[in-house]
Amino acid sequence: MTQPRKILVNTEQFKNGDALFEPLIAAGYTVEVNETFRLPSEAELIEKLKDGVVATIAGGEPYTARVLETAPDLKIVARWGVGYDKVDVAAATKAGIPVAMAFGANHESVAEFAHAMALALACRIGTRDAMVKSRQWFFDGFHPGLWGRTAGIVGLGRIGGAMARRCVASAMEVLVYDPFATEEQLAALGAKRAELDEVFSKADLISIHAPSTPETRHLVNAQRLALVKKTAILVNTSRGPLIDETALVAALGEGRIGGVGLDVFEVEPLPATSRLRDFDNVLLSPHVSGMDRMAERLVTERCVANILNYLGGRAGEIKPYVVNPQVLTG
Image (cartoon, rainbow, N blue to C red; front, top):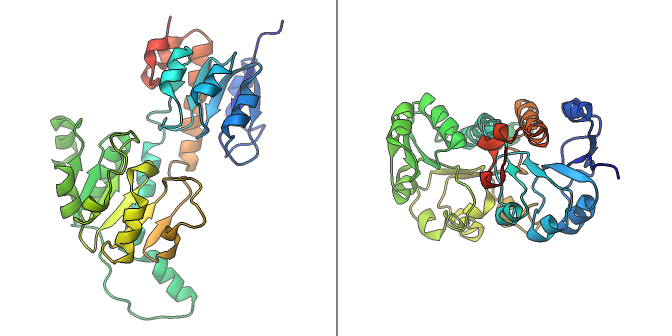
């Protein structure tokens, strides 16, 4: 019987033959890349994994208990990114499958995107571009700007820290809400610890960088949106469920928030009926903040290394990247 040697690349952005996967082929694996430019459904993933697949480079497809229970040869899931809310980690652990992340590979990319969204909103770049392209030319009022103002960072992991550095470089006072942030981290950044409601009431820019968990669902809700300045800018490049979009639409409709930049949503793709599309002071993006050219290489290389190390018997090499390290042996 032939030993299973297939690796699936399920993310939407690659094609068969991409040079980034050559180390897998050189190691004797068959690489099959998803070229549909959409993520597989649960049923499609079950079908893909039913025979001979030992590893996946995963996008946001659902690794449910049902999927993992019906994948007889799967040894490792290597996530292209740093979020794992679409993976049933308990089920993966039960199946003995490590879920390996690309920690440290694209945090600068996400922070840069969040900062760019914030600057575009604070300087009204989108509306002014549209004005001039429509052959108009007039002074539309002073834009709020960001330098010298107050930034509120929710979540001081790698991405939140990278965003905080950008805000400090813009001469902003930086307030941080993160119960796990150390005094040493805050001091190194020149940031101040703050309670969540203080962040929402004082910040001119609120940037969300927390994971999606039951505890953080709708962290941005009607009560907290009622605290924000009418000129404040809210940016979310983490996970959609952190924001109650119904409450956000209400705040936008009543003119109670200055601008919003969203790369992630409660439901993805964003439903055609979403009213978030109706506002000129809202920037929308299709969950691509961590996908610049630098991240393309670094994140993929990390996924490939995690797979080769684990399947090559070097489990210890991937331990820093695995969210369920109790499954590792050797």
